[in-house]
Image (cartoon, rainbow, N blue to C red; front, side, top):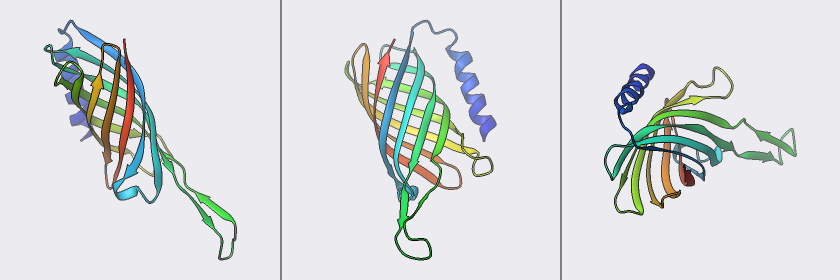
Length: 170
């Protein structure tokens, strides 16, 4: 599966080499964990970077990466053999490598999506990563974007979050 995703990203990069108009954007996001692992993780925090090429006036394609971390909840044990013991597992962190698309509904509203692979950066042997998908809806100007997104990373299980984010365009 990794080979298919990396081949698709390479194919998109070659196809975009002829495109002349594009822009770079960087930003950050934060959100609440939902789904399978919401009992174990409390929040999703991250930074994003993307380059998009304008295919038409309203449609852009590109590549995106960044860093995203799911913050683990702490558990206090007030009973049992270790009263006052606090258990906290490590955070789950990923580096996404994905293709991205964005369609401008109007001059200020857009729909977007990221699809690719999220590389797990935690303790070896616990995960390799998983398929990343992230639909987005947002507001944009010439220099900024504000967006809401659903981010999912799936492998044997699914970790997901509802996020809000901000991007600055160069």
